Structure formats: C-alpha cells, structure tokens
Length: 137
Image (cartoon, rainbow, N blue to C red):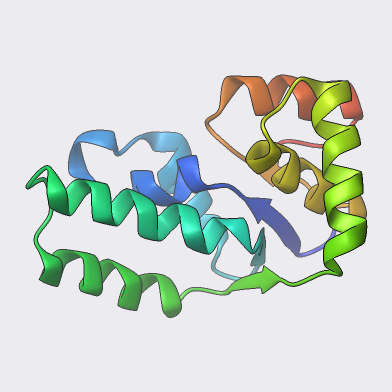
C-alpha cells in the first residue's frame, strides 16, 4: 500500500467533538503522521456543513469551528480536484452499483482511482469498500 489513504467525513468530524471520540478515529489521526490523506472536494463542504449545524445547535462556538479548521489545515490532507464530467458519470454509476449516496461514492471512487485504502466509520461505505476490494484502514 502507498503512504496515501482516503479519509471520509465521519472520521474527520469525530475529531471535532469530544463525545464522538473513538479509538478508531484516534488511530487514523495518529496514522496521518508519516502518511497523507486524500479527500474528494465534497469533504470540504461536508466539514463546513457539520460545523455550521453544530454552531446553530449551540454545540460549538464560532471560535471552536475556526480552531478546528485551523487544526485540520495543519494536517497532511489533500483535496482531490478532478474533471467534473467524468466524476458525475462515474459517481452515478458507482452509487447505483454500490447503493451509496453520491457523497459516499465520491470517497470510494477516490480510493479506487488512487489504489489506496479508505478510513471510514460509515457502515454502508465499509461494506461497499469491502465488496469493491478496497482495503480499509
């Protein structure tokens, strides 16, 4: 396996909330030292959406959200930007065949295209990765 892996939003956001901390997500964070995570562009929108929702529910303050984004930006996480038309057709087909949302299909597609493992807490994505032969960290 390469030094790269795909990380999804379920793992990322568990680092933000103390009540969602878990050994798996902590191990993935530790794994980032010496490795690079790659994420689809949708990841940025998902992170921001979770932060906004948490602020609206008074679960986080604005300063907490900004602090978390600053911490994320210091990690070796690279956003993948790929050609939009290929991505839309490919994600539609992958979502259909794997019974995934377009968001989850984007993570699986990225892992498949880069021949690297995936880190996720999402059970449906884990199942689809296993069926597709994508290693899971």
